[in-house]
Length: 174
Image (cartoon, rainbow, N blue to C red):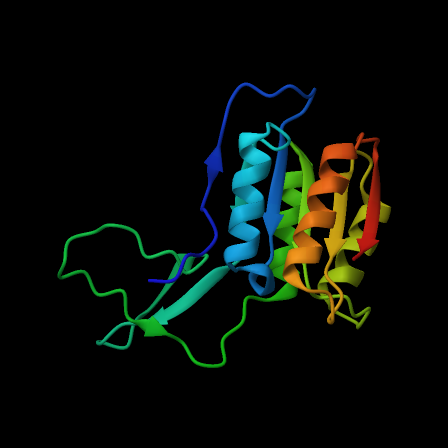
């Protein structure tokens, strides 16, 4: 099985006033980001890492189940995880709602490749939501298309290590 994002990992106690978490969009689910999350957790720069997406899977009987970040954990050997549902993507509006929920309690670093400002897209949704929120602690770190993941991870790590949160919304294109 390929290495995918660590699901719901945390450490304690935090050295910051509010817990800091890394919230990872589906498009950034790869080994480089897993290594980044592990590095930031070990360095005490974040307190947790959460996937912000589910994978729809179809079982043999046709029922659909949703698995957090596509993580297939340890269960009885006869458990039917099904297969990934073709052409299914987690809605940007749901991703934005999850990020908004986390922002109410945590300082959030959101990682995504979705840089477009299209109507209903994650970037525009988060920008609009932050304008309405009174207590937003969100830094969105977007990976530009041609940026290598190794460069993106290095720059994200540096931004997170240097970040001092204020009550606002910040966007960074890397």
